[in-house]
Length: 340
Image 1 (tube, rainbow, N blue to C red):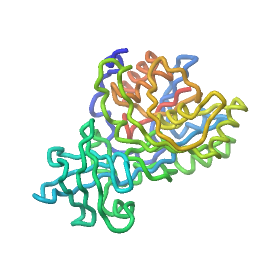
Image 2 (tube, rainbow, N blue to C red; image 1 turned 60 degrees about the vertical axis):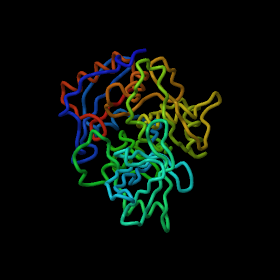
Image 3 (cartoon, helix red, strand yellow; image 1 turned 90 degrees about the horizontal axis):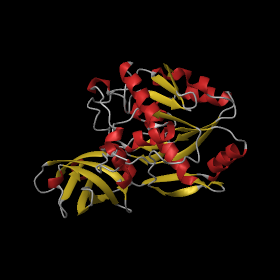
C-alpha cells in the first residue's frame, strides 16, 4: 500500500488556528458506513445519533506543560525543549530546537536555574535524552516554567490554554490533546448520561509521535511510536458488560480506538497498564468498536489511515472532499466527524 494513496490537498486557510467560541458549536460530518451516506450538522446535535444502552469511551488524559524555553549553560544561546516521554525517575526523551545546540554533555538552564538538564544521548530519531535537576516536585516546577506544546501547524497564540484540554481531562501525561474530545461540554456529558448512555473513561497519553510524518513509501513498513495506556478494572468491567449486552461501543478519538483495539482479547477486554504501538491501516479487522468520533486529520498521517481502515478509503476521501467544499475547519481545533 503506497503512502501517496492517503494524500490530499487542504487549502491552508482551513487549518483551524483557534477553537470555536463554544466547544459544541463546531460542525459535525456524519458518515453512515452501511448506507455509504454523508450528512452535515453541528456537534450540539451529536446526542441525536446516540441511543440508550450505547457506551461512549473517552480518553481522560491531560496535557502537561511540556514546552520549555531555556538557554545553553555555557553560551546563553536560546533552546526550546519539548518533553515526549519519561524514561526514568529524572530522565525524559525530548525534542530540542535547534538540535545542534544540544550535544551530549551540554547543560540547559530553565527559569534562571530553577530547572537544569544535562544532555545524555541522541536518540535514533534525532531527539535527546535529558537528565533533569531540580528541587521539590517536578510537576510543580514544570507547571511554573512550561507551556502547552501546541501542534506545529497552529501558529496563533492560544488565549485560553484550557481550551486545549478536554473538560474531563484528569490523568496528566500527554504532550498533545485527544482532540476529538475537545468538542464536549459538561452539559453535553450530563445530557448523554441522562439518555441512558454509559460513559467509560480510559487513558492513553498522547506522544508527539502522533505528529511525526510517515517517511516510508510502503505503508506496511512504517514503525509506530509507543504510547502509555491505562484501563481500570471498573472501566474494563463496563466494556465487557457492553459486549455481553451487544451494546454499541463508540470510541471518542483515535486514541480511545487504539486502546480499545489493544486491550480487546479473545475472551473480552483486559484491564491494566502498558505500552501500545498498534498501527491500524486499511486491511485491519476491528475487534472492539462500532462507531468512531474523530477530527479531520493530516494527509499521509497514521490517523487518516486508521479512519480509512474503519470507514473505507473511498468513503473517507469523499467525505474529506465534501468537508473542504463546505469549508469545514481542520485538525486539532477543527470540526468533527462521526462514523457509524
